[in-house]
Length: 65
Image (tube, rainbow, N blue to C red):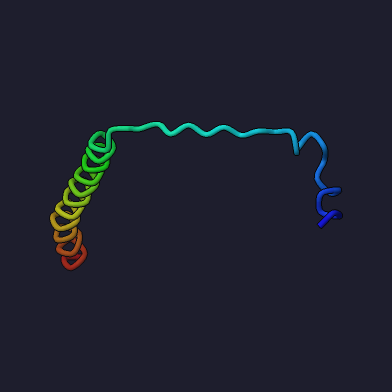
């Protein structure tokens, strides 16, 4: 055990770390996540609708050639 203490530099032993607990409102973070989730779902639905409408046009166009 004494050999482990010798491996740690002296200036590392003198450091003292202080932590502070900060309370945040959980509703603010949850609301931001909800907005992100809803916007992601909305963008996904828009892309699905675009794929459905343009996909039929591309298939019909390729079949006519």
